[in-house]
Image 1 (spheres, rainbow, N blue to C red):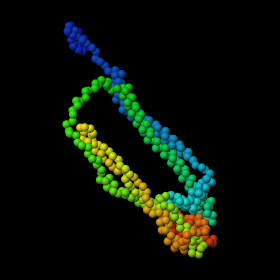
Image 2 (image 1 turned 180 degrees about the vertical axis):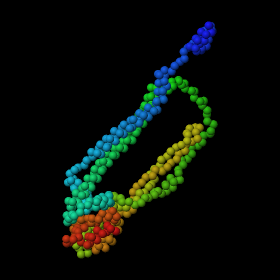
Image 3 (image 1 turned 90 degrees about the vertical axis):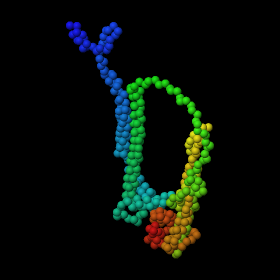
Image 4 (image 1 turned 60 degrees about the vertical axis):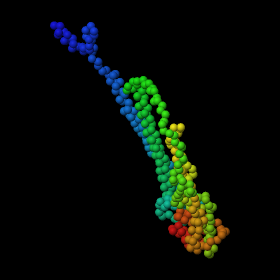
Amino acid sequence: MPFTRARIAATDVELQGRQNDGSILSTRSPRTTWSQHLKSLTPKLRLPLAILAGAAITAGTTYALVKHVQHLIANAQVSSDPSVWRNKARDDGYGACYSGCNNCHDMSFAYNACEKTARAIAPGIDWANRYPTECLEALGVIYKAEALTRRKQTYRNQLAVIILTIIAGVLGAIIVYRLWGRWFPAHLASPRWPSAPPPYIASTFPSRPKPRRKWPFFWRTAATASFLGRSHAYPCWGFSSNADQYFTHTNNTISGVVHGWTSSCHSVSYVCGSTCTSSGSSGPNGGGTTTTCTPDICYRDEEDEPPIFFVNWTLPRVQECGFKLVDNVESEVNLRIAHPLIERNWRVKISVDRYNLTDVTDPAVLCLWDIGNH
């Protein structure tokens, strides 16, 4: 049975070929091991693991930051002493509403203070006292609540650091991606030999002369103007000296002054230089260089109206209240007409030497106060 043995033997081997002497070469069929599976799989995990690592870094640091901020907000505190907030209500609330400010740069300073005092509700108080304790306590509660809100907001602002956690996650993903590629390369890099540079071919284009510098049209036209535009008017200071106009009542009972310290300005844009850029090629065979320049625009404040303008604008209203203009007064005029819209709308401050001659406010003073309503 030689044929049968050869047939059986052939089932255990694979005929790979024959040598010159006719003998049969046989090898067993190769099997893929787990290590080979792992080697082929690890390069494919490069991108997923990098993404997971970056997401883990971002999620972990963000969670820790949010928990920290929540803890700070939950335990935020301000002073619990009522006298602290009563004093603040007296100085920043009622004091600012009654007295205003001296030459301050906020035309709504007194208006904002008076608006806040209007939010303090204290029924059944005696207004004979200028600073009733009930009003100070009611306004102090508002200042305390606002202080607590600001403190909590400062803690919430720390959440802006989340952007750094995102950046950290991206950097972590990049690092993991590159390290994984070095540890488990997908393919062995074959050696690369530098190729020879291309042969040098001299340019056949004739050289052109360097063109003249081109100036844009608006730059040429701007050179003939001192400014390019102006904006709407707004309050400004420091351009002209302050202005004062004294007045006294026709019966010489009450004196005062209209004080102006604010100017009206507008913003002017003007050319303050230029920025030039060059493009093209240079050299013996190049096509020349083109330079393009654009103007640099700067801004400055220019005064429209000085403080004396606003003083003169208010004087007709003062004269309608029965006052006449004088060069000076002998008494000290330091009692402000406490209407916040006078400073805000008329841009002046009106002060008198007294509010009343009897136990009630003088009608002339009430007339000055009414200027703020116009």
